Length: 115
Image 1 (tube, rainbow, N blue to C red):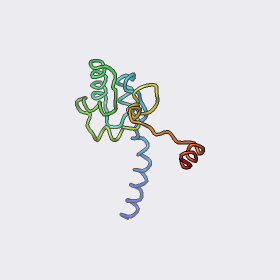
Image 2: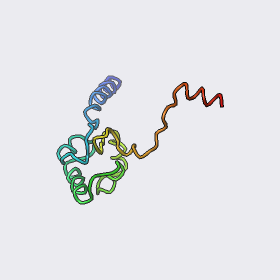
Image 3: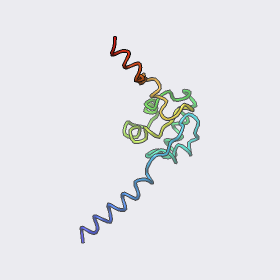
Image 4: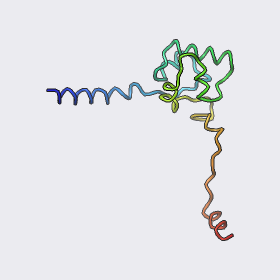
């Protein structure tokens, strides 16, 4: 009996998890209701605090800056990091500040090896 219950509970949880997944949202342009619906663990009150902070301090420059909003902690940021957008440049504008290493072409690699 317990085995059946455990299987059913596991199945119910696996089906429910996608419902709790965060949806991508631009926190620099979205209204409080959209932020609340999109991010896991962010209710309407926290979403309003995010919008108020943004109005007072300007657009967020990094995802980590959200931790300055009362009630938004590291666990919430970690859970939603991939869903938080900062601008039109695509997912996670804060990664734009990190240097990216360009892939060398095969010819350039061979030329370097000959030197």
